[in-house]
Image (cartoon, rainbow, N blue to C red; front, side, top):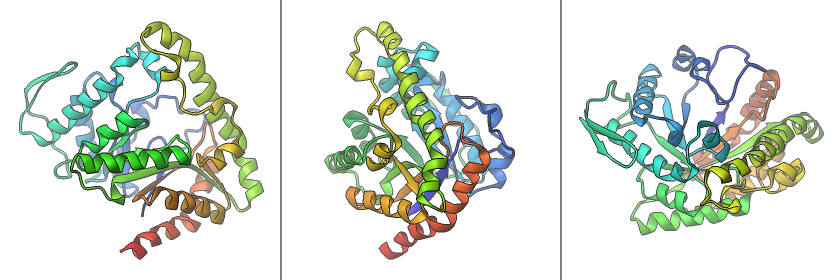
Length: 328
């Protein structure tokens, strides 16, 4: 199994308390990315970018700077991000699919020609070309049946699933596998990525105590209450939408950490507990090829994040890598 840890950006200094959201380009230090880590995931809210060609160029440049260590990750974004930029939510899905088409065309065509609903390009010679051939690996986040089927239609694109209970992800992965078969696309464990928030400490009690405040701020306030406060304004801007279509997929704002841990959202505890809980999900899903540990929740201090990463890396990651060896 491949294992990644996910934070916001590669940076060479402690940005605790000074890292704004959304993360700005000024916080991405290309020299750090070029010199450190095995891979970097570049995360893009495609419908919210004005020019997908520019995204393709920037990712290609980063791919060259890192000598082929970029993974291109794409998501549609959440409703309040559309509200902030005054983009109709109904345009999110078609904008996303078209923008991804443009990026893949730009990376693989000698000249980019595209005449779509939102984007128009004629005889564009994109430069630089990606370092990796034909392009960096592409990961796409999806929740819901239609976005999941759209990923299945794209050969070689990895489905990324998170922010759902274990039961919902199990259902989603079965839909993905069925859709791949329907579209004639081969599907293996390596086409699936599962991401979970992870916090590891020496004891269960210590892990829950250190994590709880940051967990509540992140899930209950940022993902729950802040999103809920934006919903009425979103409905006013998009009268064709219903509350059920824009509400969060889970009651983040009122659910305690213990319940969300039981539902699979977060892996909290000793290295053994975290490994066992993850392996229970692994068996429930029928396997997956890549796991991403999201190691920061809310405004978690940098030293707490680093201790989390160190313990997870020392005690859990080697056991996950061993799964690949056994499978081989």
